[in-house]
Image 1 (cartoon, rainbow, N blue to C red):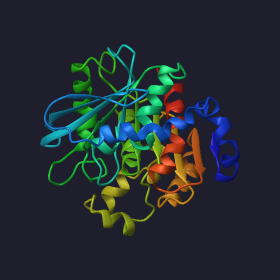
Image 2: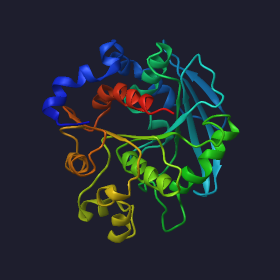
Image 3: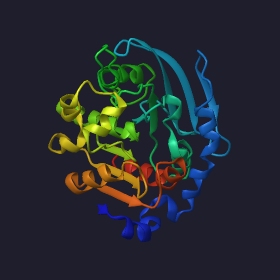
Length: 295
């Protein structure tokens, strides 16, 4: 379903399962979880609870061979459900972010509340430190994409999450993490292990090399062109994509281009900017989309 901002502004509240039941307001309650997720994790595993809906947030520090360093890994689980074999979606952070800033827009609260109210089947999120390199291999060998593809399944399996093989069923990302989610989805498809859904909020889809080069995340234009989702729509694979972006977002031009060329299942432009205030208006719909494609 592809919607423009004029029709979306009228229909968003009807489209969202959670808005019709009053759960859209839970995004505002996500500040408690946001504070927990952004807390200093230290070196040990901790379990943090948000008041009311009590999603379970666990932080660990794990050695990533692909990145050549220890990374923080944040697991977000809905409360009150068995977790063994729980389906998991990756949750990729934006530029200058980390595993503790990936859960934008109160999405942890929204997920836990939706599961508690039996409006969504249980699943969880896994966020990891990816650096500022647009989730791909760097010249120095730092390779966050290899971490996602080759190491995360083992980490999940060791924690009895993600099913028998630990493969995330979906990938969710915001800003730079939205770019990374599309690349991850493409590579999973190329490995004949496609995800079942890709959810992206305000993805960092930049239309010119002159602008992208300022981020110093790619060696040259050819490397960026090879990975850029806007230039590789035909390689995206079969997974349905949901895209949400505000009409005043800094990446609106690239997002509109992706909606027009890729024709994602959801391409929703509604009033808002590149802010957590905007993301709180769409995270209920993101959870609904992921739930619909949960295997």
